[in-house]
Length: 186
Image (tube, rainbow, N blue to C red):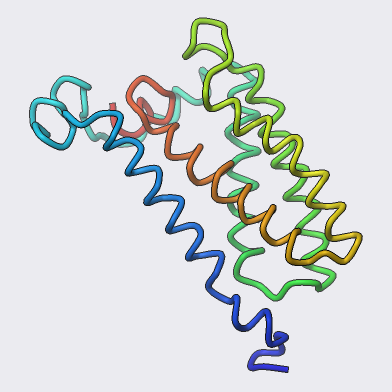
């Protein structure tokens, strides 16, 4: 056993979740930079055009949002909080399993509720819904991998859903015109 009661493989992968999260955030920033190069070249005009006005958060906009959006937001925040705890703690314990099942329920709720949120694309599914489909298909597969003792496959799938389905998708919620943009920045 290595330090802190973790197995050797867990000790060596101690920071892999954070490394993957940083990679995901960097990827999202790169995507935004490529899709909106004017944001980089003429930052002042771009900021003015998109209506960037930092202010005290206006949580009344969340309260006024449709119920499906509120469910989506609260389940995503729950999954994010539990996911951070799961990434930082020892794996395989009873607490890990209990929190893991709670995370699966929160992620499933987040993914399914997102399928009913279509305001941004005039009633149609958008690119971001691909992440929802990936999560809906991937969650049972990742749980099955854990049940079959395929820890490496389980770890890769769950980390991928955490980074892609929560962190990267979460960054997209702060784009101009989206709810969290208006709550915090617009």
